[in-house]
Length: 173
Image 1 (cartoon, one colour):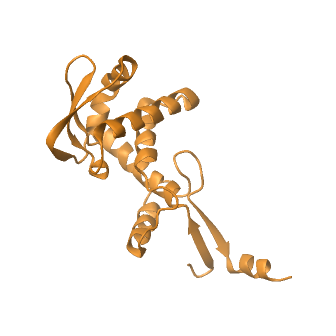
Image 2 (image 1 turned 90 degrees about the horizontal axis):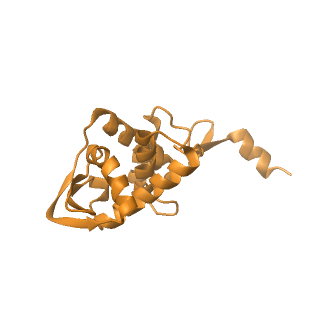
Image 3 (image 1 turned 90 degrees about the vertical axis):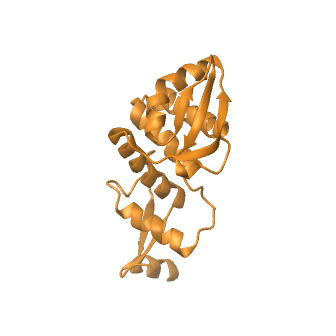
């Protein structure tokens, strides 16, 4: 709550905004952390996705993946962004590619912005996930540190404010 009322935050939209700005910064600065895998994973794609992977390979590496081409339609994953370190590399990459293709066909975004949006959408905390007070506070602090805290990369509002007057009106008959 705030002095004049309270704020409701959409945790997924807010987290997408936070991640989008971080990923965009990583792509611009060509620098991101990577969680190295103990055992590298080999992932294989169809021909169309392989072409897209080849196009995105340098940018994916800028986002924290440690990928290299390995044969005709295969890639070796040596590391992943710390946010994605808990699951299957192929699933991560396929989901990011699908979101990228969807954005490309619907929105005609530049590659950098599209990839940052795809990663942010895929990596964000989903609506309905129960967060601790610390996690909520962290998201709010990071959200208000963003350049554009009031909208997700897709333009959805990240928060709404209710004033004390709004509340009084709702409870009066």
